[in-house]
Amino acid sequence: MLERLKYIMIRKIFKKKQSNGKIQEFIKKYKIPREYLSINRKSISRGVFIGLFWAFVPMPMQMLAVLAITPFLKFNVPIAITMVWLSNPITMPFMYYIEYQTGNFLLGNASLENIELSLDWFSSNWDKIITPLYIGTIPYSLGVSSIVYFLINKLWIDSVHKEKSHRKKRFLKFKK
Image 1 (cartoon, rainbow, N blue to C red):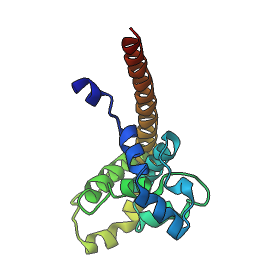
Image 2 (image 1 turned 180 degrees about the horizontal axis):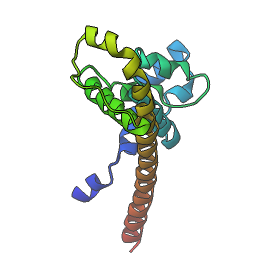
Image 3 (image 1 turned 60 degrees about the horizontal axis):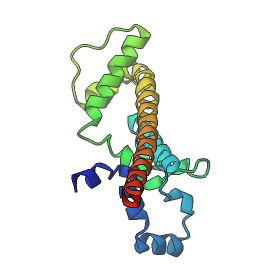
Image 4 (image 1 turned 30 degrees about the vertical axis):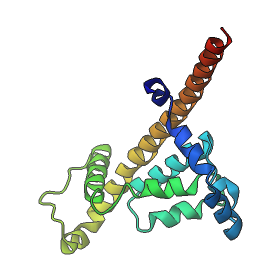
């Protein structure tokens, strides 16, 4: 039993969800292109990349940005939208503060003192905040999303190899 659990990877979980008849009905009913809901290594990893990329960009309506690029790229849209939710009202202040500080470091600027979480403070200091914030966004938006993209690809490929190896061992054991 433990050995069987060892081979259950994220790929298998996604594949089980794909075989659900409700998803197929949903696709037919709303005439959604299949590639926007497909579950394969490329689609999932691209969806995670795109979702994380937009999650780190400080802007309103990040989910609409994901939807805006769907005609140009094929990826799993629900996964991308889910990844965007990593930047939420709880995590945003921390993410944006780190991006702001990173931007100041990259630009060689000193960061502002006495930072307050108020609309008055932000409106009076907006011109000093915006450039370092967006410059600091670049390494996180591109860097983190790229690392996770390659990590998912690697784990998916390893999962396939482990499953093939496990099947081969079972076949050889059965053959004896």
